[in-house]
Length: 257
Image 1 (cartoon, rainbow, N blue to C red):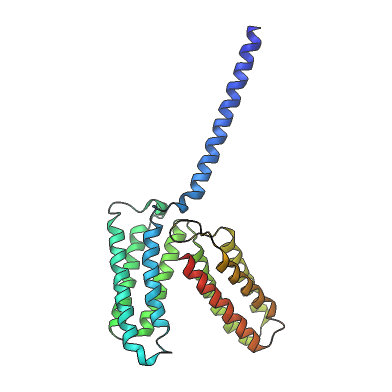
Image 2: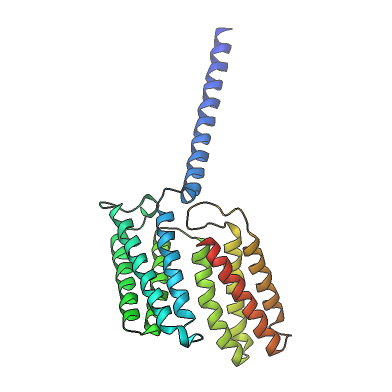
C-alpha cells in the first residue's frame, strides 16, 4: 500500500514539475513576444522623435506646390527639425550607459544613435541654406536609419514595413511605364507580401497594439484594387488607383508612427 502511495506521489510530482516547466516556457515566450508592446521600453520616446521629423518632412514635400509659402514652410521645417533633434538628444540622455531594453540586441546602438543625430543636423543645415531638396533627402535618410536600427534589434513596427512599401511602390511606377510584366510581377508580389506582414501583427511606435485597424484595412483594399487593375485598367485608372493606394498607405503610416 505504501509503495503504491509513493508511486502515485512520485507521478504527481513529475506531472506538477512538467506543468511548471511548460508554464515557464509559455510565459517566457509570451513575455518575449509582448516585450515590444511595453509602453516604457523606449519605443514611445523614439516615436515622438519620428513623428516630429515626419511633420518637418511633410513641410518640405509641399514646397514645390506652394511656392509663395516657401520661406514659411522652410522656417517651420527648421523649427520642427530642431525640436526633433532636442527630443532625440534628451532621449539619449535617458540611457547614458546602455541602450533601451528593447534595443538590447542591437550591438550598434550607440553608432546608430550617432548616425541619426548627424543626419538630423544635416537636415537642419540644408533647411537653413534654403535647400529643400537636400533637406528632404536627409529626412528620408534619417527615417531609413530608424528602420535599420529597429531591424538590427529584431523589431518590426508597422510603420517600418510601410516605409519599405513606399520605396518599393515608387520603383513600381517606373517599371509600369516600361510595361514589362517580367519586372512588374515580382514587385507587385513584394508589395502584397509587405502588406500581409503589416496586417499580421500591427504594432505602433508607442509599443502598444493599435485598437482600430480601419486605416490598415482601407490601405489593404486599395492595394488589392490597384494590383487587380494592372493588367486590365487603362493608364488613367491605374494612376488613380495608385494614388489612392499611396494616400491610404500614408494615412496608415501616420496612424502607426
